[in-house]
Structure formats: C-alpha cells, structure tokens
Image (cartoon, rainbow, N blue to C red; front, top):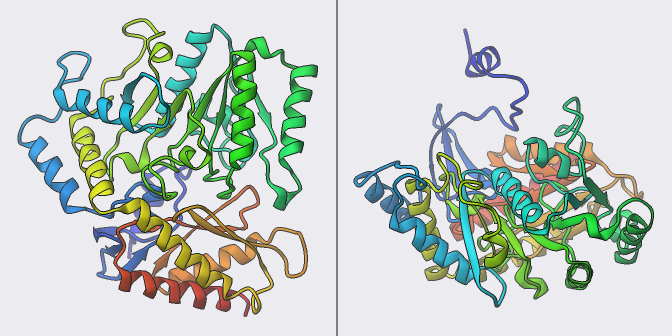
Length: 422
C-alpha cells in the first residue's frame, strides 16, 4: 500500500525537510486534524505565522470579502487602496518617532533582501554585519546573513560577499555583551573599515538560533555605534513581530528604533505577505522600479494583515502573550529539580524556549530535545526544536489558544519531558 509519505518521497525534493508526517486536513485556532481524523495541538503555529490562530474568523472574513472584489492586479500596474492603508498603519505602529515609509513583498527572506538593497543604495556602502546564530532566509543573501551552516548553507557556496558575522551575546554559551562588542571593535580594526558598512542586521530575539534575547543595553550600544559611523540598523522582526513577544515588535522592549524593520510571518495570519518599514528618506533612496515584485503586497495578504492588526488590538494579544508565557515558564520551572537536563528557560512574551544539556554538564544535549519532541508528538502535541546545537525546544502556539487546550498542552509538555528521561 502506498502511503502519503511514499508519495511525498517520490514527488518532492528531499531538500524540503519535514518535522512531522502529519498531513493536515483542517485546522481551527490551535488545533489541527489530519487526514485520518486525528487531533493535534499546534505549538508551532506554522513557525510563528498564525499568531492569531488557524482560520481566525476576522481574517477569513476579510479575505473572503477581498476575493469577491479582485485577487491580483500587481500594485505596480494597477494599485489599490488597502495596500496604501496598510503601509500607513505600519508606518504608525513600527517603533521610531520619525517619518516612515513601507514596501510590501511576499516572504521574510524577500523582506530581508529588500532591506539590504535599500541600505546599500542609501549609504553607497556594500558591507553588512550580521550575527552568529541568526536566521534571515534561504535565498543567497539570506544564507550569507544566516549564522548557521547546517542545514542552511552546507553545499550551497560560495556565499554573497561583504557579509561579516559577529558573536551574538549569549552568556549561557560563554559570550558576554562585552565579548560581542570587543569582536566588533576587532572587526573594525583588522578586517572592515566602518565606512564600508551599510548596516547591522539583528534579530532582537534569535528565532532558529535558539530564542536568545539581545538585551536592551546591547541593542542600545549597537545603535550608538551605528550612529557614530553612519551605519543603518536593521531589525529582523520576521519571527518576533506581531505580539509574539508581548509587544507588537520586539524592539519595543529595548526602547530602540531601527532604521529599517523587516516583517512577515504573523503579519498575514496564514497568508503570504511581508514588509519593510523604515525611515522615509532611506526608503525613498532606490529609484522607481528598483523595488517591488509581481506578487508583492498581494490583495489577499493585505486584507488578512489588516484583520490581524485589528485582532491583536481588540483581543489584547500583547497582554495575552505575556500571560501565556508566564504560565508556560512557571510550569517548566516546576520540573527543574527532577530534570537536571534543563539548563535554561527563557523568552519574552509567548516566544519561549527550554534548553537541555547533558545532566550536570555544560555540553548541549540535542538527543534529549529531540526525544521530548518525539514524546510530545506521540501524545498529539506538535513541538519544534531549534538552536545552533539543536538542543532547544521552542514554543510557538497561537496567542489565541483556548485556555483549556493550553492547559492540556502544558500537561503533555510535562509528561513528554519526564518520558524523555526514561
């Protein structure tokens, strides 16, 4: 008998990795049902895409209304008002007390590519400084910026040039803020003159890299150094944006405004749309036609994004993210005494993670993290791992998850961590 997995293996490149063999049939809020009718609790949310839940009624209604009007004209050919309105909203909502402008694209990687293009055009400089452990996409510029070789860069070289990496401050792995800043100083002294740098790019909370949060002091210092040398600061908020961290944008926690902000994932609530919002004079640097794309700012994605912003505000999802994260971290903390593999529990809002080492050691334990994920899946809870060492479980449930389903999931998390020790 040919299974769906057999068909997938025969039809789809093995380069498209799959975390589970669940084939979705339908989904609602924080639950997914497969083709056999099995129910799963979704603590992945399409990797922080459906922050407002699968098929939120407001999002579905907005997209259906747009479907009845038109689905595509290409904004660069025949523009439409809701594209302009969404740009106006993001200009107002993105951190920074200065005039801003926005462009739309389709994916997070595309947003990052455009931010780099804009930064280089505005400054007339080629260099981009990124951080180890960061993830910025699978395009060639995205791969070059990404600070993780496996599986993203391996075998795809050579990478784009004029991209430089610094250690990300991570005391748990022996890198202090002072270490990271000293590495930047050495870079400027030994390899790269600041006058050649167009931008720093940073995830305020690293996503794929392990949910490590850059402190307000570090981001503030990076802002000072950027201003000193005429360098732009790009905040990659693709995974951190839209209430995931308890703020609409994670940079709000630091009280620092980036010159350019990239966003995607949670913006569309399940529909493909991304954006770059930044200082008006920077965004206006490229010539007409230098930015855009056939599907950039697709009307359905734009309609969904308007609904997502409404839901975040009306349902208080920033505050709810904080409450959910506090409850999750409280439950995880209760396991510390009996699970010595737990080395850290962290994350702002509901962008949370638990990290595992070998018991009584500082050596990462990816096998334990994977066993937790597998045990959870056996209990119909979908979890994701992450981190440079693969020893981190990240929690990305929809912010709209029902209280009863959330508590059910937390029970499964505890059971799965205990079972992983057996």
